[in-house]
Structures are given as C-alpha cells and as structure tokens.
Image: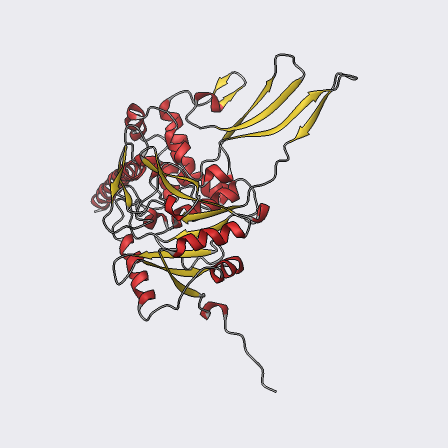
Length: 402
C-alpha cells in the first residue's frame, strides 16, 4: 500500500481563478445569499466613502482620487477601473469599532427605586467588506488586537481584499511593511483581487484565502487563470510599491522617538497643528474612546454611551487636578510617539499602516513622514557632533601622550 505524503504547506499554491468585471454583481449577490451585508467603496459627497452596496453599480467605476498633504479630490478615469483609487476619508474601523454606541441602558424600578440595567444586546451585523486594501487589512488585524477581540468574533467580516496597483501621493504602505500586496497573507482575507484593466479585457485575478472564500467563489462565474496572468498581476502590484508618494525613514522608529523627546521639531509642528484630531478620526487604528452617562428629564431612564475620542483633545488626559498634556506640542508628541514607538511595546507592532489618510485629511497638511524625517535628521546631527567631539578628544589625548 502506498502512502500519500501531503504537500508541505509552504509549497502549496492557493486556489486562483479569473472573474470579469461583470461578475462583481454575482459576487455581491452570492454574499447577500450567504446572509452577509456587502459594504464597499462608493461615491458620495465628493469623495469615495464606504457604505452598503445595493449592487455592483454602486462601486466607483471610472473614478479615482488625487491626494496631497491637506488635499483630496475625485478624478475621472478613462479606463473604467473599479478600484483605481487610494484610501478615502473613512476606514473599516467605523464598522468594527463604531463612532458611537450604546453600552447599556437602565430604568428605575417603581417599587424599589433602584435602577435595573439592561445590556445592549442588538443582533450583530454580519458584514462582507469589499475592496479592503492591504494597508487596511493590516489595520483590521491591529485594531482587533488593540480591542482584544478575536478576529472571528461574531463570525468576523467576510473580507474581499483588493491588492493595490494605484497608490496615492500620500501613501507609504510599502515602507510601513503592509502593502501594496497581500496574496501571501492567506487567512487575513477570504478573497483577494488584483484588478487588471485594458488587456485584453477588464478582469480580476482572484486568490482564495479561506474556506469561506472557496465557497463564495464557487457561486460566482469564473474561469481558469491564463498563462502569465499571475506574473502580470504580481508585476503590477510590485510596480505600485515603486510609485508610493512617501516613505518612512529607514531607521528604528522606536529608538528615534525615544531619543527625540526634547527635540526642537516638536515646537515647529506644534506651531502648525490645530489639534483638531482629524488625524485620529481618519486613522484606521486609533481606538481611543470616552464614555458618557445621560438621563432623561424624569430621571427614571439612564443610558451609557461610548464615543470615539482623541488624544488631541485637552480633556482626554484629564486626571484629578487637571489635564496632563496641556500644550499642542505635548499632544502631538504623545500621538506620534505612541503611533510609531510605544505601540510596539503595547501591542507588538507599529500603530501605523501607511494608508496616508492622516496626511491628506490634516487641514494644514502635516505629513507624518516629513516630521519623522526631520526628527531623524536632528538625531543624525547630534550623533555627528558627538562623533566629531569624540574624534577631537581622541586626537588631543594622542597628542598629550607623545
């Protein structure tokens, strides 16, 4: 009797297929049939936002985006690409960690006068996220870790990732290590698409990342992968890495920020920062919240609500006696140091995925990559001075010993 030796996991190739642009409607139909609520990019209010998709027609066909520090605008695309845009103002955080939610309510018992709490027990919504960029895929993982939530809690969202071939001018996911591809991150997505427009037709290379993805693909018209298509798709994704508008300094950012606590650059950025908190609102991983208790006028009904908050709010650091971080300088330094430095100590990764939203949606165009580069230049200057001082001291000691 022969023994079948299973193929090593490292050598096993994922299931791949090709679907047409028309099959996106079949994909949405299959997700709805599976009891999922499809959410994805759509055009509204002059931006590409995330909302429930009634059909594939709601997707931003032929619409792209142009970004710059403090700037975002829609642009028309002649190629009809569906996912030819970079990150918009919203992230998937709004569905996983809602901006405002009821924690519980309580009503006074007329007999005893005591409040009887009623926990919030609304049915969880089973989402299908369509069009998740690799940077945002990493953000979902980081957010789950920060919120101490299992990725499969409430079955977890069904994720249709779209690998990036059109980075924006404010993107830097390549240097953050989260993109532009994700095909080798099976388990983080259910299906991953690479959009190929033009030659010879508008189509998508599909990579299956889970059993759920396998089942959904079976319900969508698809075909075999032609020779060379995987290589062309991988080349398109790899080329996107070379077109990132920005990059992080190639240094240990934890060490850089730990050494930069007294840097003069903090005064410079504080002179520009409005402490509006926009960067934390659009950030796909910022998770800070505050809790508010309310009652009705009769005093018989009370509710506790959780809302997004920001470390740029002066009251966020309020403790007995007053706020700890009273200046814009201290609040910006806290945010940047936590995001790129102490987040590693707290959660084992960086808190930044390189989506660039904080740059585009900062009203004064503060660029985190520029600020980190300036801090790095400052540390390099100090190190050069120390080396010169050390060399001069060694020279003096050599002369004195002669």
